[in-house]
Image 1: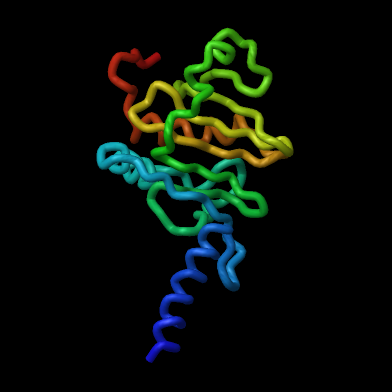
Image 2 (image 1 turned 180 degrees about the vertical axis):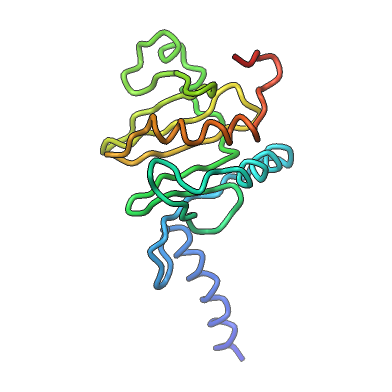
Length: 170
């Protein structure tokens, strides 16, 4: 009886280890941590998932593991990853960013969607929507045209994630 209990406990622990490290047995899918937003934001993220394009930046949709309506992906090795319902990035309220004094972050807009762009290591960019009811984060790997990615996603973001109260849409 004891040996069965240990096997049952070991299997969930192994599955958790694979999920935490972004690996799964026999699967080459990208991985993405699933955000844990409140109910309202989770609903907006589900709405966004329903209207996301099948192709972004020239890559076909290939969602990361674990499967969730709060995450999406396009391409592979490395993939373009979208996570909806992430917390507000600290740099979004940084005076250095607002004044253009942060070399690794800059605000901007593409097709009517405001974004905070952060430079990551290895030529990777992370974009997070600003002034919207939900924060949507998009990680664009090195070598991918990030402006094309944001243009491809703009329509879906505008349809599903409304402007935050107090901000005027352009």
